[in-house]
Amino acid sequence: MAELLAIEGLQAGYGATEILRGIDLAVNENEIVAVLGSNGAGKSTLNRAISGVLPPWRGTIRFEGKAIERARPSAIVAQGLIHVPEGRRIFPNMTVAENLDLGCYARARARRAENRARVFGIFPRLAERQAQSAGTLSGGEQQMLAIGRGLMAEPKLLILDEPSLGLSPKLVEELFALIQRINAQGIALLLVEQNVMQSLEVARRAYVLDNGAIVLQGSAADVRDDPDLKRAYLGM
Amino acid sequence: MLSPIILVPAVLNGLLTGAVYALVALGLTLIYGVLHIINFAHGALLTCAMFAAFFAHRLLGLDPYLAALGLTPVFFCLGYGLQRFVIGPAAHGEDRNILLVTLGLAVVIENALLYAFRADTRTINLPYGFDVVEVGPAFLSVPRVIGFGVVIAVALALWLIMRFTDTGKAIRAVAREKLGAELSGIDVAHIYAVTFGLGTACLAIAACLLLPTYYVNPHAGNAFVLIAFTIVVLGGMGSVAGALLGGLIIGVVESLSGLYLGESLGQVGIFIIFILVLLFRPSGLFGERA
Image 1 (cartoon, rainbow over the protein chains, first blue to last red):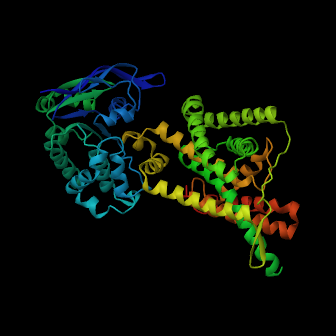
Image 2 (cartoon, each protein chain N blue to C red):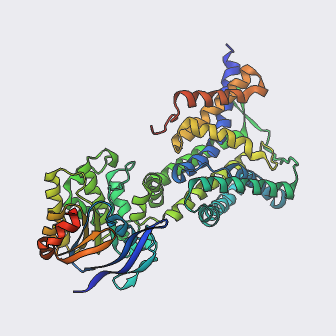
């Protein structure tokens, strides 16, 4: 199976504070990979470094073989690596349809209409509300919109940062089913979650991040059964 | 109470003056709405544009309205370049740095103009400069009526750009959600520069509309920017519709307070409005509540 994303020796931080202390991580084509870890472990920093928002200090990030660690966020999006950020970051002052259209800004612009139809197929709720201002959507709908906006760019790899945050248990259930449906369309996913057990159910492989380093990795089943998981994750 | 024969012309003239104020304010509010900074170089750039229009007439014999067609893209590029290659890199991502950089730019531009052209006040003579058109009881200056029409057209064009083009949508997206825009593949540095370019292009048009009836000297732009700032606060910081309506209101207020208090005190009304807005509706007419 071909490697889609390959990260080696990644170090990054803010100011003089090092957050990521040398990360090695890979995502293969068509794979769901979970990155687990408690608050402050460095998960969001890792995502920001991958998507180019936070330029890394050292290390390499390759996407489809091409080095992207010095690329601008817009160039990374144009290559098909899409990051759906924590907190959704939708455009509240614009309609649902406009939000989706902007997902095609850097990529797949010619197939905007087809992609919109595909996203509406996955999220019929968004189709009903396309003329509504995005800021008036419920939290769950906003999460759907954020993911839908990411799908508009025809991602090869979709990074979902804490997608279940703030959703009701029923919506979380739906979300994980949806993640599998997206993956079934041939899209690889990097799922960054605090929701350990459900993430391990859908993922093929998993990494556990603690204090800016990877402390545990392997197949999802191995990670789930590893006695170190509880210790690393819950500090027990 | 004054009779309608005096009042109606005062209001109409106020609207005409207010339209040009609105155009200057439109550029200021656009830049504020997206970059979240007050562009202190706005006045100096307006002065630059007025000199450009002046010399386009003096040296090339171009009518200011014709010159606008050329100066608008030139000033768009100037604004784009300033933000992309001077203000953006010099600011290192900190808003208060941007503020200081634009203030510094204003000082540099004004003094360069003073050095090149001295403090002399210049005007141009156009055959239609003093033409008037009769509307009911009022005699309105033809150049200012044309100016009013152009401002309405520019505001409409700007609204269409913001509403329907991809670049316009990207500008609105960056204004409210920078990180989300970046992660959607929008090049934020480019959008900042485009916005700054649009704001500066508004000044080029305003300068060409002013020149047939107004003078130019190295400080000419400043008077407009102080008023434009009042309009931006009145209309709501960052609101395009607010700038347009606010500009018209301020124009009428200036004209009426000139009528009641005497011409030399005309601007008192503007600043009374400014203080009242700050006291009772600090978010402005169309501003979003904080």
